[in-house]
Amino acid sequence: MVNLLISQLRTLMGWEVGMGALAWLLIPLVAAIGAGLWGSWANRTRKVRSDGPELIGYARFREAMEKPRSDR
Image (cartoon, rainbow, N blue to C red; front, side, top):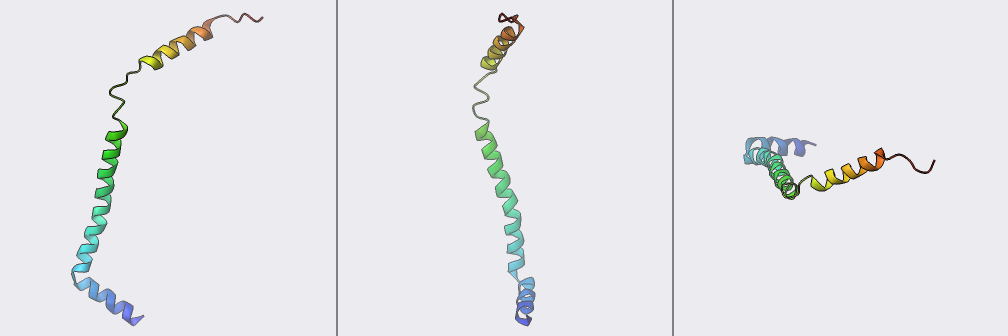
């Protein structure tokens, strides 16, 4: 127990604390850069493809739903 306390005090005096803090600050930075890259990659096809096929399909669906039922 005493050895553990002494080793903690020794790390508070040296470079280990600064490097540890730097490592903890780099983790969110790397995560943010990775999220930005993934977001730009996931959005790459949305600019090329328009809403045309979806709107055409919706128009056909509405026409089919507006027709009167012929089975009764």
